[in-house]
Image 1 (cartoon, rainbow over the protein chains, first blue to last red):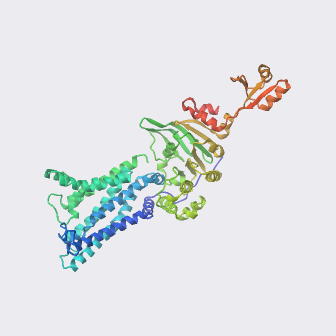
Image 2: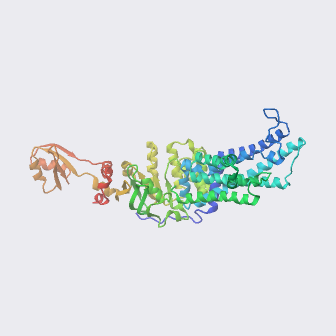
Length: 273
Length: 304
């Protein structure tokens, strides 16, 4: 049977902007995306307000007094919810990296984009586009509402023009977004949601704190390079002398993010899908 | 056109695909037949660049699939029935994938109608039956209006309605001049649809032939005759039959003559025929015979 050559229409085909659009649609059309972003926003703000109320004595702990960890500086108090936001966004990152492996959809995706790496870059860009604005919104929301509570009670407050408040707010937004990217990289590299969630929460977030608490002082010079410790200089109000300074902290944390994505990209490009 | 050249895939010490070469020509239905685990899916994944060959190469329309600028316009594939996110609607699944190839929602709605999923397009794909999932997979394969359609076990697990639907669709695609390449472990499926047949077993190509040729070479022209005087009948048929054998019951197996011709000859010679049985070999049997021990059979034997 003879046959005319099949014509591919002009303008058809894969391009990076189209892959980004595709990944954007994929993430937008999952309800879990909105549930995770919504709960991050709600918890970040709610815990800020609750912490502010507690520190002003309007909410008491079980023993009838203000919780011991509070009553520090106002910026730290109102940003208490950042830890929850971090956990939720790390999980969100893992989901956007590993989810397609759970269903086998990754093979369909790579049939559409056989060059593969554009898929990874697009996933990273889209993840940033979803996480960063909501984290910034949540941080500012927690800051203003928390400060309003403190101010109403006549307690010490800080304004956004305060340089350490700016450093911590911007730093937290970058830290949480960066940890979401590390989650994505782990999800893509491990191809399993449970495994990658356990690794990012246990290994990246909890283990460094545990090691710092358990290992002798002499280990500090090594432990300060772990992601969560490297992030401390730009996510905490009080700069600690035993950790990295601000700029080295940023460099080391960004280094972790880049390293995780580089390893994921290397595996993603080479492995059988 | 798909050109597979000396393709090999090893997983550790296991050779899933062993130095195979074949061509899927344009404009016909090529069946890729083999028992489960023969290497069909692995070969298809290597065609799409999903698995990296240990050796050899695959060209799709003359170049490796990975290098294609418009991959899904060249070849549309269905590899697994459940390759979608359960939480997403069928339509959103298609819209998301289509976007990466610059394909718009108009085409998405078109393929949804084509596979008969328009009414359930906004439902979550997780609630789909196997048949609906298979239809969604075919919709994905057709999004780019590709010249080649490649389907891995498309009728697996489908009810008779679904099987008939896929068969009709594949015929229609081929009649539109598309190249259709489909795998199956069922010869009966291939009989009804394939023009060309590639049989694989234990990672090796056992036959690469047209369906017509395959049927000719395997359809039986042997007849079993029980008669009162075997030697006499053999004498009568000697100049017309191709070969004679005796089975363990003492019956004569005649090759190259129809039962009617033998009956007529026996009657004319005045011989009593006690039994006259054409020995049918179904294509399914032929396929079983061919694949039961891959190592003993080679491509040449079938085409002979």
